[in-house]
Length: 59
Image: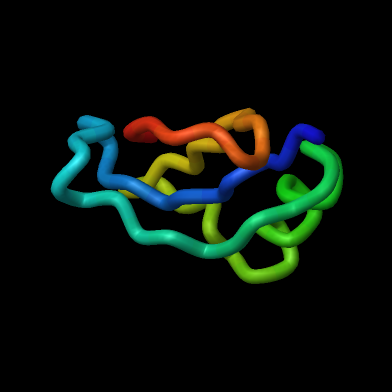
């Protein structure tokens, strides 16, 4: 099964600036959540990663 992980980062998209916001079953749900909660701003970026469940690895 595939899930989508929602993060907000600074405009430089550094790993140190990532803030976790949730795990979703579809990319559309992740985007809707980001829009509803004002995660899209002029000084921040939204990143959504597609991951498989039950696999070990760094995101």
